[in-house]
Amino acid sequence: MSSVDGPPADVRRRRARRLLALARPEWRTLAVGTLFLLIGSGMNLAFPQAIRVILDQALGQGNVRDIDLAALAMVGIFAVQAVAQGVRYYLFTVSGERVVTRLDGETTADAMFGLALAFPPWMLARLADLIEHSEDTLRIARVVRALRSVVILAHHRSNYVGRVAQRVLARTPEFLARLGDSRRLKELGTEVLSEAAQEHVPTEQIELLGDSFDVSALRGALIAVLEGAPADLDTELTSAVDQYVRELFKACFRDVRDRSVMFEHYRPGSQVAVFATGGYGRGEAFGADFDYLAVVEEDDRGLKKFFGKVLQRVSAAMTRRGLHPHNRFTGQFNAYVVSVPELVHHLLRRGEETFIDEAEILEARFFLGDPAVARAFHSQVRALVTGVNADEFVQALLTELRTRRELPPRGMNLKEAPGGLREIHLLWLALRVVAQLPGPLTQELLPGVANVLPECKGDLRFLMVANAELRRLRDIYRLVVAFDDTMDPEVLVATARDLRPLREAGIHDGFQRELERLLAASALRVDRVADHIQRRIG
Image 1 (tube, one colour):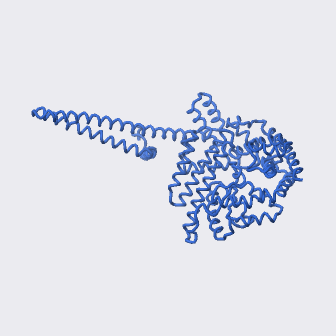
Image 2 (cartoon, one colour):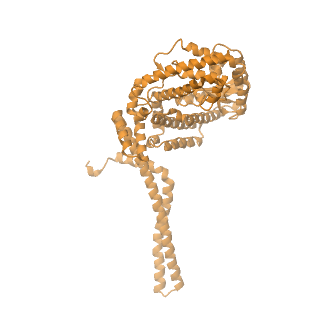
């Protein structure tokens, strides 16, 4: 076949289908434009009729009034035709520009992704840096973000981010076309969520809810790396997780209830309270697991069985999306749901590891279900931790801090190392009880703790900064290298060579020594604050 013949028929059909797919969102605009095209064409047919009337009346010495009316009709035809053609031109032009914009966006994104796969990341990193310095415009900024994003997705992503990206690009390929625009990526997640709200088949609705969450999670991961500040996404991503689990719970609730008449009398949002705990309970994004508690007010076996079935389905759906749920009391009570009286009885019979359960209860954040059950949990269960059991709980935390030093972890483990995130977290829990704080220790609540332990004011400020820095580095490592607490600093430094935002965030060749000094200084201050707490409680 010669070049004059054009591309093969199957290629032409494929291109036509792609253009039709790009034009499909504009069908309403195109339909209205076509209607005005018909009106304009109809006026072309009506115009000769008006001429005929004028000529017939003039040649036949007809009524002058009829000639005037025919002339007036011609003016009306001209006016209607002009309006119809103007509206048709506007609607077709706008639709065409939107289709071209989509085509340009998809082509650019596809080309960038192909570029990222074809060339080594250091070349693409250099290209992004050159483009960034060429011109300071919004369009250039979006191109640079898109290019660095595909470098992350193609070369520098952890196993977790890779799996999320694989699902998103397979089920929501529009993500790639919006890669450089974080606002449009957020809108994409909202669009999929709206589609899920209109879906009446539970299994399909559950999948769409997961798709919406995946879009939000991948968008958040890319922004966290590109800005070098994962903690800035805490509120947004924690809210996204809460919304996903809430909507998922509703869908699974309906699915379980509709399968048996014995469950018909249960109502959504009633008689159960679900709490996030652990990292998500503290409002921290990019956690390894989703720790949660599910509580009912009375020890009703039927109620616990029903909500246990719902939570089983919720857990299965969350696991498929990489958000691994961990029910903190399944091991102790052999059930997904536990009652308030059972928890009270459990806490009053303290054992060596009761402080672990008390820590989960103290950090539990209500986000789903019946507020009345949540109030009963706070007034009867949490009150035990901060009241009757307070001294024993704090003592157990301080003992845990000391015993952890006897078996330090191998490698640079930012969570388990002396002075690491775990030790600071245990210290924060103790301070929360000692200073009677209303929530997790934050910068805003620090003055209240300093009033209780004034001699620790400087150490507490240092530990607040150290905790934020260790968390930032751990989360970046989890996103671009491996979802692990044990860090290989050299790998992260090598990754930063291809991602300028990470270099600007302080990841450079001397980074490992700085991190070691930070952990050592943090461990020293943890010991000093723990000693002051020990002296205070006796």
